[in-house]
Image (cartoon, rainbow, N blue to C red; front, side, top):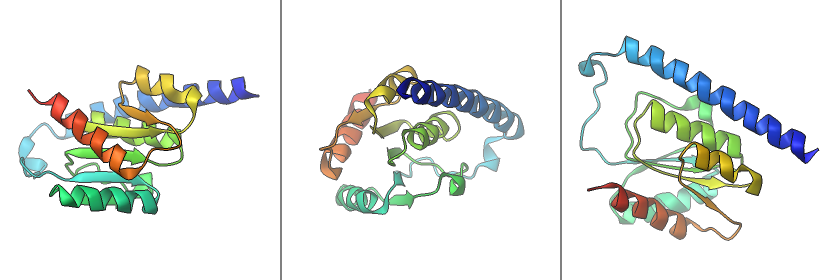
Length: 157
C-alpha cells in the first residue's frame, strides 16, 4: 500500500511539474514586455503558505527583520503576478508544498525558498526538484526562518 502511495505522489508530482512548465511557457509568450508586470524591483516581502498558526509565528519573526509577509492557506488563491523575495511552504501536505514551491521558482522567480517535508519518502522529490527543505517533527518557526535567511545569505554573491 505504501508503494502505491509513493508511486502516486511521484506521478502527481511529475504531471504537476510538466503542467507548471506548460503554464510558464504560455505566460512567457503573453508577457514578453516587462511593463505589463508592474512589480517594484527592490520590494522584499515573503509569502507564507500553510496553516495559520505556524505562518503567524514565522510572520512575527520576519517582521523583526523588517520583512513584511503575506499568509496564504489556499493554493488556488495565489496571485502569480505578485513578486516575493521569500517563500516558506509549511503546509501539512507535501504535494501542496512542492506545487507552490515549483510555481514560486518557475513562474514568480522567487529566489529564496524553504519548504517543510512532512513524509520521509518525499525527501527525494524535494531533492530532485532542487527545493530546499527541512524534515522533522521538531522544526519550529525560528529555526525555519533561520534556514530561510541562511539560504538567502548563501545565495547572494
